Length: 210
Image 1: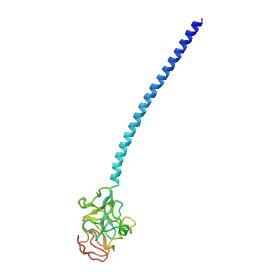
Image 2 (image 1 turned 45 degrees about the vertical axis):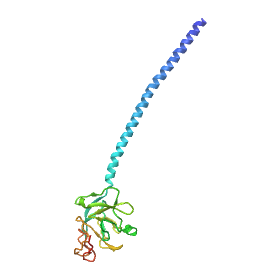
Image 3 (image 1 turned 90 degrees about the horizontal axis):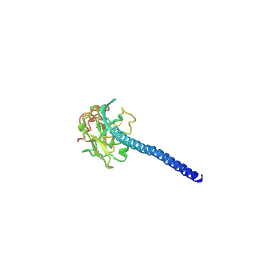
Image 4 (image 1 turned 90 degrees about the vertical axis):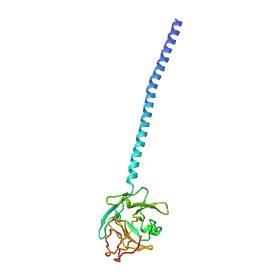
């Protein structure tokens, strides 16, 4: 009788142990599968995220490129403006695509600087659009070899309060799609034509050759 009890106990213990091992194996298998499947999902998500960032990064870079456009300014005419519609100016002291405006001058007349190649808007001559390296290694947009600036006195698009101002050793004026400026042609008064940048407040041409 004792022998039968011992054998029965051993059998029960063996069955329990086998059931435990089976349960552990059954549990481990789906967990391992879930872990592998989860890793696959994470990897796919990372790849999708990288593609998303790359695609949007390219679009963002394109969207931040400066576009030089044309616009009609009351009392002035059709002139070049920046992406935000601010009137652009040129400085008679700038020669051979070299900016002579820095320090306090650049505060009053902020240079049109870019981190990407500028884009020519509708009506703007792409061949005349370029850049020049400033002293601080920043790129300033040029048009017809003239470095371009905005004016701190213009508070909104459609204004050209800087046209005809003399300061910092030279004269400032708007510039049109032709790209010519300070060529000495005859002006027409304070408003000027605004299309070539040759007229000013005094009514005559400035007489600055380029």
